[in-house]
Image 1 (cartoon, helix red, strand yellow):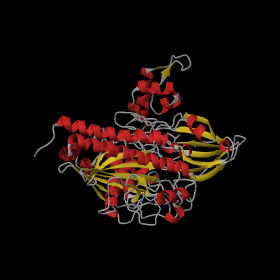
Image 2 (spheres, one colour; image 1 turned 120 degrees about the vertical axis):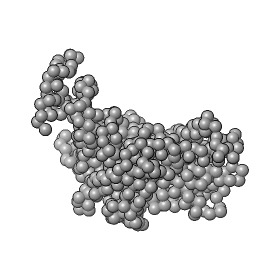
Image 3 (cartoon, one colour; image 1 turned 135 degrees about the vertical axis):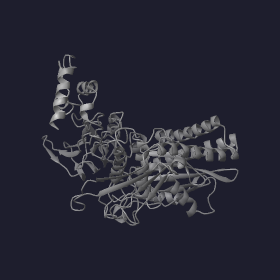
Image 4 (cartoon, helix red, strand yellow; image 1 turned 180 degrees about the vertical axis):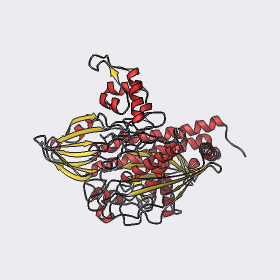
Length: 593
């Protein structure tokens, strides 16, 4: 069978990645809301005309799987009536999208009359018309209570021009219409940039070569996946975990289960998600796109790095779902408002830590979870701008990342479904955009899950209004069950949220809460920390010394958990590991187990 020259294959693959990155830069520069332009809560990708994910570049893991379902629905809804110059909007969680907040812009790309690609830009909108001022609504009883406008593959442009009725519907419903419309144009602009670049690519190489590239690239990706899976031991991995409880609704949280059957002989991984709770009357139900993306992302975390994330690799994964379930199988009208976060975060942790059952050297620990105070959706009237309304989801939190067999957890993790791929807001930019002042932003000493490789520490933030009341909607899921360590690693610490009164007194708040802050009051939130990997007593003493010097770990934790003792002091730069005392201390701790 004819195949492309490997150099040309690589050139075109990198060109596609370049196109997706150009889409990304367009969104970053053109979007109006901080959740997109500052936090980068969006993903871009290219799907083939036959609905195969081809190039996601640096898309967020939770956003990517399911885009091909959305493009397939677009074609099905508009059978025979899709034309060059069209654009479509989809945010239907029952039709492949993640959750209603993710507005997905799809532009079909034609060359010589054939639908060759669909460019996709998926953006988390700051406001989508929910019944509360937040694009997240954990406590939504159903889609009617949630209130979001849902567009199942709706045409929004024909001949490159807006269909005005759709735009008017959205502007009439959202709280800050100009902000939404700016983000709408940015998402469309990103997809249109890809349209032009893909047409140029087809013109340069010709239709036959591009079609051959698609076949060869997906086949190459599949071979890479086969090689990875075939080197794993044959096994059946079962892992469970719990989401946070919801007072009065889910007092015990949700017991979640992932079953992985690894078949190296046939180079397949079967993922069974069918043994999970039925749909619940809150916004925790996870769409097939969100739940599957979470699990797929975790599998790639646990496999060799730099595997292509596309349809070719996905061919080696098989999924089993329940018919009606909170995990990947919600039924209308159950709400999927927080499908991309709370339960999906737990699915990432459960899946990637399941691989650690294969033994030291496999899998990861659990990463910090929860949209805490630093990721609240804030809203109100800005006294600095004539009491103009504002709504935005902040991105100032930094849950601690998980540790791996070879590395400590990374500090800029955010949450498991993001895995470091979103940007952290600038404090100064958030203060300019919104009437708040950040009083404190710091890492929390001794919060990390200890291990041979340490989980990343938690962060604590505190902010306050500078004028009018500020309403903060917090959808946190990381305040009860702590992120677990693996292979002897210890858990990280869970998060917490407090209202800070004008006199400095604090009152702890529920994990899911809408709180209105008055001038002089503050909101303080502590994120959760990553779990450890491996025995803490095996940690390199030089790394323990570094953590103590950085202030991430205390001398007492170094002594009691890591078994490391020092001479000298931090203050005069004389701190050093006392090796004989350390060896004796570690032997003592091992004996005491």
